[in-house]
Amino acid sequence: MSSDTPATIRTVALGLFSTRGYEQTSLREIAERVGLTKASLYYHYPSKQALLLDLLRPLLDQWGEVAAGAESLPHTPANVRAVLRRCLDVLLRNRAAAGLFVRDTAAVVVAIAPIWEELLQLNERLHGWLAGPRPAIADRIRAVAAMEALGAAISSSAYLPEVTDDELRGTLLDAAGAVLGLDRTGDAGSPP
Amino acid sequence: MSSDTPATIRTVALGLFSTRGYEQTSLREIAERVGLTKASLYYHYPSKQALLLDLLRPLLDQWGEVAAGAESLPHTPANVRAVLRRCLDVLLRNRAAAGLFVRDTAAVVVAIAPIWEELLQLNERLHGWLAGPRPAIADRIRAVAAMEALGAAISSSAYLPEVTDDELRGTLLDAAGAVLGLDRTGDAGSPP
DNA sequence: GTCTATACCAGGATAGAC
DNA sequence: GTCTATCCTGGTATAGAC
Image (cartoon, rainbow over all chains, first blue to last red; front, side, top):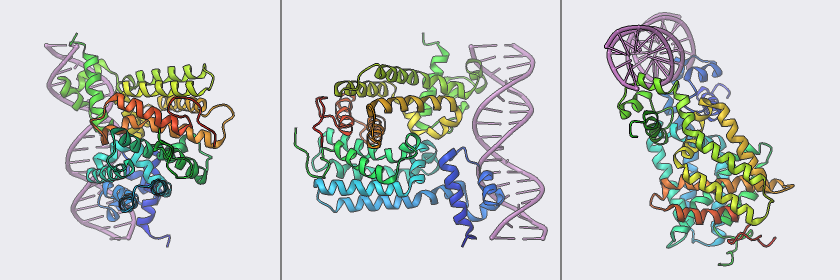
């Protein structure tokens, strides 16, 4: 139904938050676009923070599933590539929410500190798995860098607006893999 | 001199901005730490935005030098590696300011839109050079991803606080190079 | 479920005394 | 150069009518 007001609010809010930024978006602005008044929003959401939290929840849950899934797999090149792919898919499926996390970190942190902690811990689990068993420092740095490279799926829209999701998927998967020393097929790269 | 008030203000502001965030830091908070009142700040800086701008200027200038320097070089594997190294050095030398750009993007954009435009254009020049002559779409994506991997120098502090700059330099340089298809020495990688 | 009206608070910014 | 006092704006939140 198009009369699902909370859903409409979420859609509008996500759009505004991810373009203007969280702090820069007023409740009045959201209300106007939805066709409500500022005060009416408080009927559906108890606070601006609660609204933000609802928007980030799906991404966070999916991210948690990827982390949990990874930890049940042995650390083989093919599995590394599979996990990277799942990360990338989650990012692409939740582009707007992910953009909020990366471009508006400071605001998100103070708004929902516990959620931020949760994300940090999920990332640490993913980094830990990606770095492999008994990782050297360099392995741990590479794990962070590989995830960061996947983040290009989000930031690239500012630089390469016309690029398709499939192009991103193929290229970024190889890129992140290369950071971790995989070749383009997912086999182990030749050791140095 | 330790009585260089503007310098003290900059130091305190950069510290607060880069931890709490720009919007989340009030002028009163800065003033208290400096040992002044809010109003006194206005004797030294005409606005909060002007203060932020002063903080970001050095990074922006150095970034511009790297971009200009790159464009005067032929696109060889050794030069690509050299440019990546310069990018990384600038990031490490300006960690706090760079962190402001990446973790507080939304706020920075609205505060100083023209500066943000300048950064986008500098990045585009760097991406363009890194992607090489007559780049395919994949080359352009890889260029963005490589720069993003270097950004791990900033984000890694949240995950790997004990890591040294030299460890970051060595590993991230290889990582970004790998994204662009270089091997670890800076020679051209074998084509697929 | 949605609206009007209103109280409240915080932050940026300015005026003018010292 | 620094202070006190004050203004103005805007977001947050509540009460209560419809």
